[in-house]
Amino acid sequence: MKKILFSLILLGCAGSNVAVASVEQYVAAVDQISAEYKQQTRNFFTSLDPQQTSFTSQQQAKFCGIVGNYVEQLYQAADQNRESLDRQFRHMTRQDVINKVMSSKEMLILKKYNIQCDLK
Image (cartoon, rainbow, N blue to C red):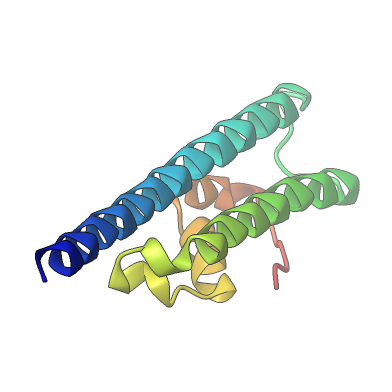
């Protein structure tokens, strides 16, 4: 009986460690995805004319591609680690990620450029 109980406790601890490792993997993935996104947007904005007041259609397509890739990577990271995430994040949809990104402070600052990214 003690062996069975010990085995169950050991399996429970191992399962807990797997969940913690998965959460850590998710956080590391989000950090990496965010760092890449920041670098890509920084490169994009440094390529613009400082006097520019709106994006050309090509610039908007490029920027929306960067944002779309960011959303996709964030959603995939959440989807791959869904079982180990907190309950409020476990049921996160792609649209939830899009809404969060599009309502971020950075995107609100860009409203003056009339950016219209159709992310789905």
